Length: 161
Figure 1 (tube, one colour):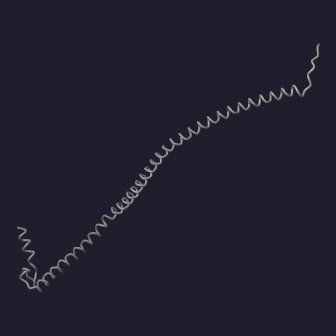
Figure 2 (figure 1 turned 120 degrees about the vertical axis):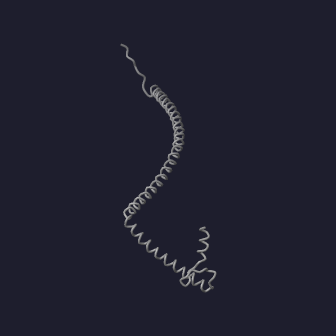
């Protein structure tokens, strides 16, 4: 039923203070009637816009404190989200650094262990060589003492008592 009412009312327009069917009017009268209907709708929209502006002002006065609180809290939330994102990035960065450092520690430890073994081997060889050279020095000193004892010093005379 409402569809029939809607169909009929959509065909009716106000023309010269009467409602007539749009199809019964001439082209010029149709334009005039539709322009008048448009003007009525336009005026109604302007009145509604004015009422809306007044109502919005009342709401701003009523809700102004809450809106201020909301904007301050929204700013804090945005700041905290940015901080959270930054800290998340930092955490991931430090986790990667930790992983890389653990790998590097293993590599450094193996390198230092091998260098230490090489150094110990070299020290053993050098200590052995030093011992040999010291022994050789002692032998040469003994030989020199023997030669001096037999060639450069007069024979000792022992007294009989």
